[in-house]
Length: 157
Image (cartoon, rainbow, N blue to C red; front, side, top):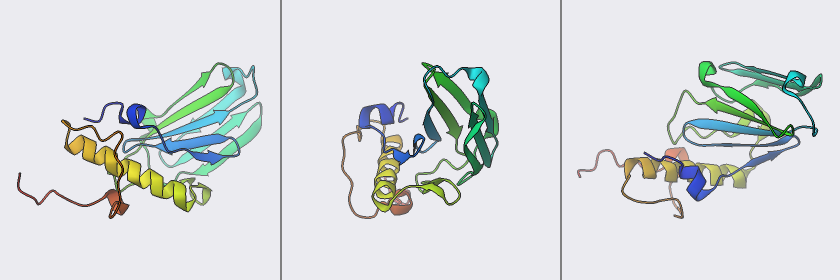
């Protein structure tokens, strides 16, 4: 498996006014910068399978329909050092071809370069899972990587 693949190879963040979000084949991570000294009691975070809402100190940070479905029972949020909220969403579709182009439908979209880098990253993560004896964390990829890259499943081993 590609345990900690992103730790070895880095992440491709999509910057937003409130922080950033990034993804792996299985999860979407959201990092929100909040005023220093924020307490958990000042945070309202509702995580559904298709919807998300975050309010801090009574002010809406974001609210809307997620780009794709998630497993709501597996979603978590934490407040770190009273200045950063970290939200982790588990994707229902965990294929390399399921690269989110935005966090919410029509909002917080990855620009073309970031989207390209995210897709490359998910394709390399897929290769890592399929070939656990190799380390793809520092690899570069070119060519057909859109939609999860080429399908080698029909090739004989």
